[in-house]
Length: 148
DNA sequence: GCCAACGTTGGC
DNA sequence: GCCAACGTTGGC
Image 1: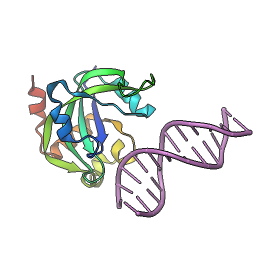
Image 2: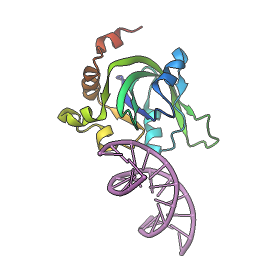
Image 3: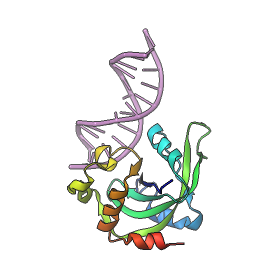
């Protein structure tokens, strides 16, 4: 299967980019999701998939790139078997964060889930959207792909 | 801090 | 199984 791209949304006061980076190579489970759509997207993820790390509230910007390091498994923060999550690790900070208003201002990104359904906390991102946002963030995609 | 949008819950 | 009520999210 071709690599898929995603977007993970969090509030900086709850789980910041620095928190994610601090978890290092082994990463951390993306727990706490209690929404079926978001859970289903996590079930679709494969190890090696890449995602944007998006901060809501004050930042409202894509700030970094993460990689899925474990497929969906039970969410350790609940006994409720309905909820699952993947593990992710930080792999690169965007040289320039890409704010929501820039994304909204770009007609090529008008179909992004972030624009159309801002409340969904885990979202799919198309390959084209991935390239455009990485480019806006000053990130060289080739360097990501050359990584180990 | 407000409020619209959305998802979930629970009574019927 | 419908739908009103409610809670939460997140942009503004």
